[in-house]
Length: 586
Image 1 (cartoon, rainbow, N blue to C red):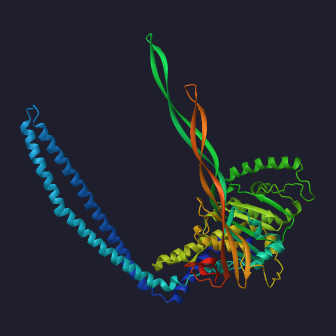
Image 2: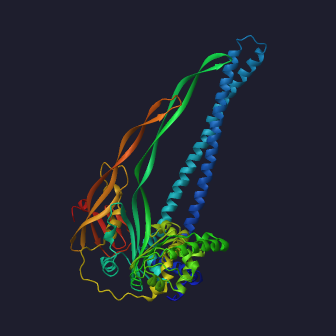
Image 3: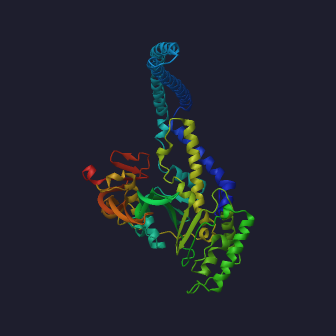
């Protein structure tokens, strides 16, 4: 079993042990799941083999039918051309020409040949196409029956997937990382009371949580938060007009008029909303509680050794200048460069505000582990943003933005046992790798692993049964049109607002923030080559904010089975939600 000490070099621990361990755990888990589901694997293999053969036959038949259709089209075109040729030859016979006999022969041959081609196409090609239609219909019916049979054979396994599988596998491979079924109010309160992070800090109407995964490392809480964000970008609109004018010039002593033309283009730039996702890892730890800093990727993993050396030397000059300027005006925050210039250059946390705690956090061992993580190309290299705000750490990785953190059980439903197993194992390999290297910058710091948070005394009651992050996640699982204002022309950002706790249920106000697209025209003046100013109307759009509030009901039902939607009900990761009015408030 991997120990916290082994994890101080996370990349090495992953490559030497964790990678293989997790692959085996995922494979064994799938085999055990298949065994418990009592599916007949050999029968499924035979059915799937027959289905793929049928699909190949279907593809071949469609290809043959397409060739006949192409031939039919070609022959009809040829027939039309021959008819046209016959008509032309017939008309030319009335002209004075010595080739009268030739025209007669061409016309007499072309016209019958055209009708012969049309006749043969209808008698030979069309029946062959219809025959292929019949064959294809039979093959499609057979394929559909085989596919249905294959799904029935796999139904026991498909129904056994649940929301917590991938999380449990991560903990089995690396027990240090404990993942929760869902983000409970108790853990949210723990983050707020102990570490100073509140989910209500994320209450701005331009961001909505669409997935959350919480857990802990040695009692230190963390949350993966996938956020749907609305930003504004400048959008440029344009329109063009063509102007003409007359100029006069003298050519060979004569004055001539010359018409000139020019295309004038005008532009108008206005802000417009755009939408994107971000995934962050939020981690609470009491170590170095007064220290704050931030760093961005250095791109060092894309450099060779000589390029890194040059990069470090350039950074050394920056560090010398910073020391000379005596940056920092608080006790403990006066900037002092570490002796390990390579670490300083690559980690680049130059805005740190407490030198003493920075050194406690980044010991020589931590520095070396971080350098190794940053400079190694595989599996991801230096692709992480690291922000520390007192007791709360924020990690955003480039690979984490592309990874499917939801691990929804429907991802694994399939009719082919062999494909299902490979997909399940491959997904979990990538799931663990991505998550582990989100943690890697934190695991590289010994003090974080040595600092176990004392047991938190949880309260008996909280102001709601579900957290704001989970309320927004459940809301985002619905079709957004359910919440959108009727005049909305854009997507929506869903924010959880007022909560009324009724027993085990929460009645949550979800406000949907969107925009109405309003057409406007701005007249832009442009100077033309004719020396005159011309007005060019440019159509652009303004976006007026809209808001509509809808109430949903959420409840913790402690059931992580895979049914994520039942009619108007959303159910996932042990939580349930529905639009309040849709079930008559029950």
